[in-house]
Length: 363
Ligand SMILES: [Zn+2]
Image (tube, rainbow, N blue to C red; front, side, top):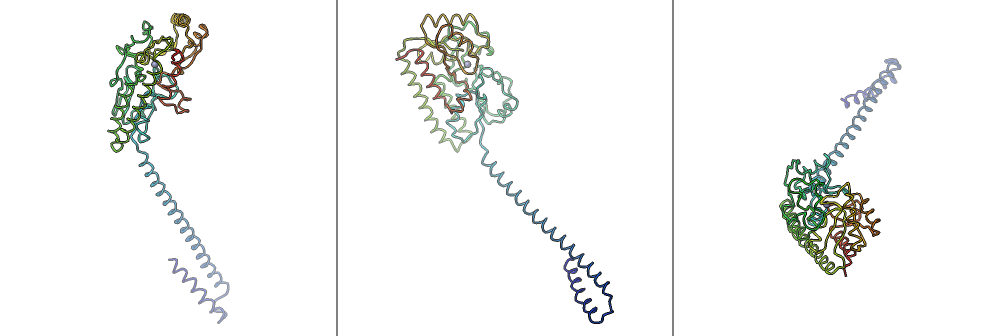
C-alpha cells in the first residue's frame, strides 16, 4: 500500500510538472500544487505513522525480550533456592541441624531469639511455616504445649522419645511446688531440659543426621562427616565438665528455675531453684527466704538468673544475701545478642562451665 502511494507521488511530480512548464495553461498552477500538496501531506502522514508503528514494534520486542529474560532468571533462581526445609523448636536442636546440614537445608528456628522456651506459642504465620517444613523436630517432654493441637502435615519427630529423661525428683529440693508449670498429665514429672546432657545431644545428633540424610540423600556423606565432628566436640565438652568439676569446695548452685538437673546429676553437684521445671512469673516468698538462708549458710558467692524471665527475684535474693548475680544459660533458646555473636551450643556450654566452676570454687 505504501509502495503504490509513493509511486503515485513520484508520478505526480514527474508527469504534472513538465505539463505545466511545457504547455503552460494545460493545468492551472494552483490546482497542481494543491493536489501535490495533498498527496505529499498524506504520504508524510503515512510515513510518520509507519515510523511510529516500527518504533512501537521495536519497543514491544524489546520489552518482550526483557520479560523472557527476567522469567528465565527467576526460574533459575527458584530452581537454585529449592532446598528441603527443617523446623526445630529449641536452640540446642537447631545447633545440631545447623552444624550437620552445612547450608544444604533451610532451617526454621521455631523459637524467636530471646523468648522463653516454656511459654512460647507460634503466631499463625510461623505455624504456616512449620506446617510447610519437610521435617519438624520438636523437643517434647511437655516443653511445647502448641504441639498438642497442631496439625502436622509432614514428618514429625518428638525428640524426647529418643533420649534419656530425668524425673523432676532428681537434683532439686523444690519439687514440692510443681503445681505452677504448664506441663500436662504425667509429663509433669519429666524434666524437659535433656539437651544439657551430652549423651542425649549425641542421640539427637544421630537422629537428625539420619533424618536429613533421608531428605537429601546426595549429601549423606557430608552429613555423616559433620555428625562425626560434631559428636567429638560434644565429647570434648563432656570431658571438660568432668575434668573441671572434679574437686570443688562448694556443692550447690542457686538458679532461677530448675533447668540444670541433667548437669548436676552427671557432674556431681546440687542445684537449688527458685521455681520448678518452668520459670515462674510470681516468685514464691517462702522459697526466696529459703534460698537466702541457703546462700548465707553455705557461704556461697553467687546466685544465677536467666535471660528470658524476670531477674527481679534473683537480684533481690542476691542483694539480701550480699552476693553476686550472674547469668546461667539453660540453652532452650538464646538471646538476640547471643545470636548476633553467633554463639554455639558449645560456646554457651563452656561459658556456663566457667561460671559453675567459679560458683562451686573448683580447683
Ligand atoms: Zn526450662
